[in-house]
Amino acid sequence: MKKEDKKEIKIKKEDSKNGASELELKIKELTEALQRERADAQNLSRRAEADKLKWASYYKAQIVKELLPTLDAAEKALELSSNEKLDKTAEGMSAVLIKLKKSLEKIGLEKIEAEGKRFDENLHEAISVDESDGEKDVVTKEMQAGYRLGDEILRHSMVVVRR
Image (cartoon, rainbow, N blue to C red; front, side):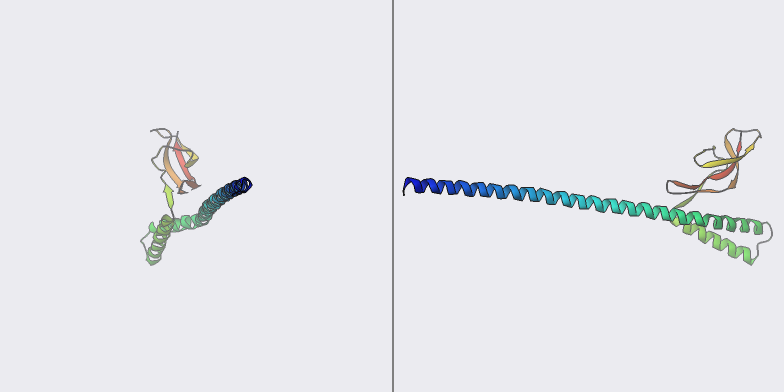
């Protein structure tokens, strides 16, 4: 073999090595791009799921807020009828009220405890003041129940507070 032929073979080997390293570099770039796209897709999926949960929670709260006046009315009707001897209507109302409360509790509705508790402006709304003797800043009477759904306060308890 001639010296020129050996030189040409060496150049071809170098070219193929350069070509192979260029291909490897291109493969590496494409692999990294694919991994970034996969990560972006996963992040988008997570954000979409979080948004879906947020909206579901929002709509659940709106529905429960709409039902609170019905709950209040049912409790008031039962309270008025329980002052007299319970009749069949009052018994039926009681059963409906119990079922409604259980259904609302299943989806996370909690009544805010008020009477006898220390006044908390985050949970209670003072609508009157009680000037009687006793411990100050204590709720003496609940005028309307307050409710929370998870961490969200749907309605503050309307209360009388001893000052």
